Image 1 (cartoon, rainbow, N blue to C red):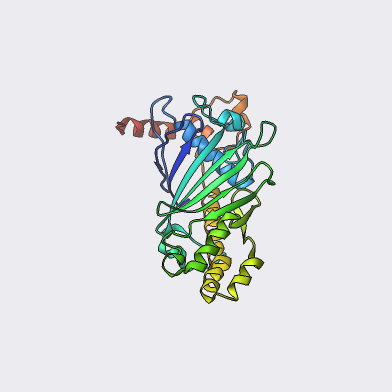
Image 2: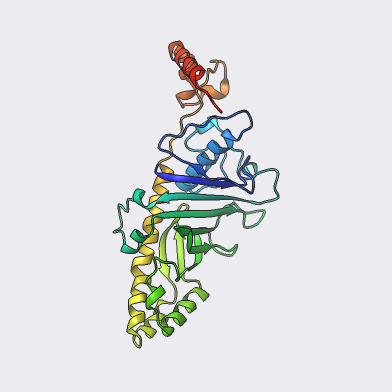
Length: 297
């Protein structure tokens, strides 16, 4: 996992004003009782399950099995707010992007840091919660905004893009005709996006046939349209693929505990952390000795 930081809103202990949580290749979580340690770990378990399986109403996450019960979507919501949604912001450095299956377009290299912010909510009381909106920011500047209405099928999104983002080729070279056409693209929903599991895997520019008519009379717009048809969606799909891969790569080391063999809930758990200390007394002594030497603020 090469995520830089994570912000969580309305997930259990996390309310409306989350702070950035730095993420390292190995992240240890310490804190007093009720400090939010479990909420942080559970939020990562939920995130991994949602992106890996496309399921948002989660009870037993894939990584933890029966050892963790999130209680479903409603139980994940912060009880001190009236919010009906979960919100995540995930930050990744450009240097950690792989673009394994897609050739990385040049405009991606002009951005040093990307942020994905997304919201999951129920379209209505009777429906399954789903990804309802998301944004991609490049160096803290909005790049792509996408949304799904209650009428849309699950995994379908409309979108608009920020043509004035510094990474875009339009900021200095677009003439009046180009600017008019770019504004028209956003007014109709620039791209249709389609997700199979959670994040989009396909991205198609809307009203392409109408835009091709303009190309015949404006060579400048032809160059910009080529960017919108090929380079921009290719970069975004590659970014979504890398983010999905990083989130799927989250690994979970459960709490190291001494669990009695008579515990029926844990007897069926295959995670080694639940049993390791009870089976190896010498390991328990070493862990306790190390903890005594540590000083926590």
